[in-house]
Amino acid sequence: MLALIFALILLVHPAMSAVFEPLTIQTKKGPVAFTVEMATTPAERAKGLMYRTELAPNAGMLFDFGVEQPIYMWMKNTYIPLDMVFIRADGRIASIAENTTPLSTQTIESGGSVKAVLELAGGTAKARGLAVGDQVVHPLFAPK
Image (cartoon, rainbow, N blue to C red; front, side, top):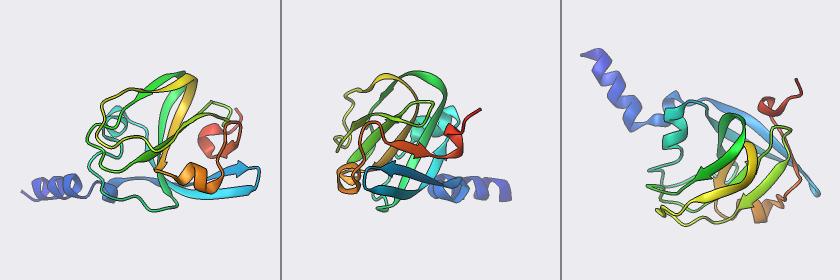
């Protein structure tokens, strides 16, 4: 019974079990710091930021796809607009989809092979000066 109650708490409050890590993006105007929730398993990547009603200005979710490949995202069951930052294995930003439409099932493409996607609150990329070619600093992109 106790295990069932704990499982229900985790379903209601998914951030309780989440892993948060620092991430910095080196922009032309200087470093921009975020705290990101990691989405590394297929289940975590499938759920993403679905059902969230807010996202702090310096927060985001980093989706790790393991290897570079074309990535296709959508906004199904996502109630807030997001910026999707598509990142190559070397940590360079390949493309940015800004202010994606909440609840849309339209496909959002990476435009090439990437290793990860960083989701931020809609408007963050422009407001913080993020651009294609900027360097993302996080252990996921550390040189081997």
